[in-house]
Structures are given as C-alpha cells and as structure tokens.
Amino acid sequence: MTRALLSHLASLLGSFCLVVLLLAGLPGNAGALSPQRAGSGGSEAPAAVVEQLRLKVPAGTQRAWLQAEQESWGPWLRRQDGFLGRDLLWDAEREEGLLLIRWRSRRQWLAIPKSDIDVVQGQFEAAARRVLAQATPTAANPFPLIYAGELEWVGLTPAAAAEELR
Image (cartoon, rainbow, N blue to C red; front, side):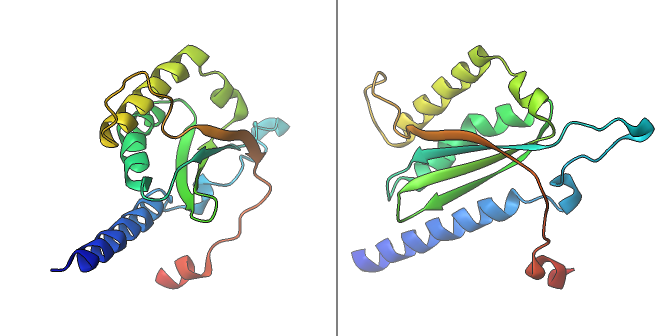
C-alpha cells in the first residue's frame, strides 16, 4: 500500500471512531436527557444542566484527546452522583473539542470538590502527554481549556433518524 493510501485509511478510521464515540454517548431513552419536572406534592425538582467546555484540539490530535478523555474523565464521571452522560464533538474549522456533560442537577454538579477535579485534570494531562509522546511531564496542558460554561435544558426535539430506526 502506498503511504497516501495508508494515510487516507487512517483518517477514515479516525473519523469512524469519532462517530462511534458520539453515538455510544447517546442515551437509548430521550427522557434521560430532558429536564426533571415537578415532583409529587407540587414541589419542583431541580432542572437538569449541561456543562459546556471548549478545548484547543489541533488537527491530527483528536485520537489522543479522546484516549486521554477515556482513560481519565470517562471513568471518573461515571462514578459521580448526578452524571447523566456526555458528548464529545470536534470543530475542524476552529480545531476545538466541545464537551457537553449532562448532569441531573446543577447542585449535584457543583457539589464536586475542586480538589477532586484538579486530580482528574492532572491524570488527563498526563495521559494526553503520554499518548502524544511528549516526554516532559511539566509541559503545559496539551489540550488547554478555552471556555467553560453551563446550559439549562428548555426542550428536546427527537431526531427523525432515531425515530425511523425504531
């Protein structure tokens, strides 16, 4: 095989992996994504929230970013109270990763101690440097944070394609 063909195949495989990761992160039931409604007795439950993060992810490093996420944040998030799931997206034009992390409530999300987050962030950065084969452990974060914010659920429109598959 020629080098160009191998490069093209590697690119296609990387794109396929990103699509699979995105689809794997989607819940089977759209109800898991929708905000909680008023509970019994007329008291309203806290609304679901989506943590929004944007990271610098240069072209060609997406696989390293996803592997570092899978090794560090993925397992840790699954153990957190109120965690519902997350979507990892990549913007090729901006060379940015977008993480949408769904939480059952803002209270549960914000109850996580910053010290716990700092430990996992350190694990993420170490994994990213290892995957990228950066020898210097004191190097800056390979995927620096550009933006952090939150979004509140206001509604959900089911995807037509998902309905057709059922």
